[in-house]
Image (cartoon, rainbow, N blue to C red; front, top):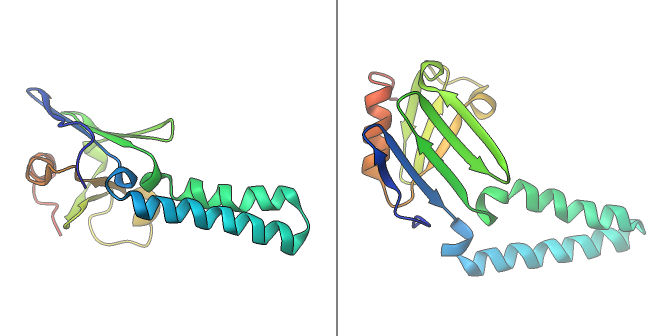
Length: 147
């Protein structure tokens, strides 16, 4: 997924970038939006409730916001920050114990081993064409925490 901006180091100890998957996959985004409209129509007709007909596709679209809307990431000496849908989630490196790098991003976890709470307590950083920079930054901050 290409970065919306080139990002890169903004100073000696910081890395920032943005990703917008829907921009790089416009057909998939259009299919999701169309399917949401169809869902709304089907729910409204099936329940005869306009509120549910509007609410159902909105819940689906909000749950897919990380794909449909831009997400910005910033890694600093103190921690990391994820900005999406008007919300900012920041965590200090001292809380993170483990990371898992794959082809699309890095998952950061506050647990030393895999845990069922990973999905709720961890954070996923999607690469924006800067895989090597992100992995190197995370490795430097979490030395010995790779799984």
